[in-house]
Length: 187
Image 1 (cartoon, rainbow, N blue to C red):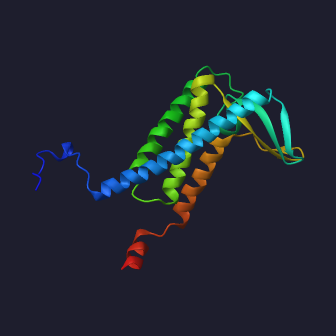
Image 2: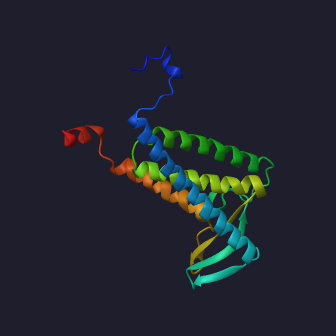
Image 3: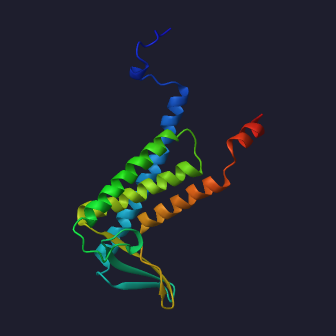
């Protein structure tokens, strides 16, 4: 039998539950890494094959691939701002979001559910856009949806992952059973 540690803070032993949580964490961070990979590859493909501000029509009257650079936040917010602190503020906000999402994902990695998948998508998307901001000072956007003269701001794979992740989190909040119902149904 192993002696009880003198200070619990320094006990780094792992029981079976901890091992299972560690195994699940790998999947969540793999999802985030796949989002970053898809984001990087798609931005590279657009950047190397489509000149800036040109479009390739995919579905006429509805969807183009258009190479644009967004120096603002998601969906072009603050893009017109000339403030010198804009990029630094966006990078700082992104870093804080990455830290918070990573902590939430780490603490809630005991099961695969809507929340953990949503957090994984948000983590990957936030990291993908942060990468662009740190390296280039702007984000490459290229998914351009429109109907007639009504256009949605161009976006990218990272933005898509963040929005899908946020939708999953909202769905979890709105449709999750209260803990009292979960306890009643399991007994």
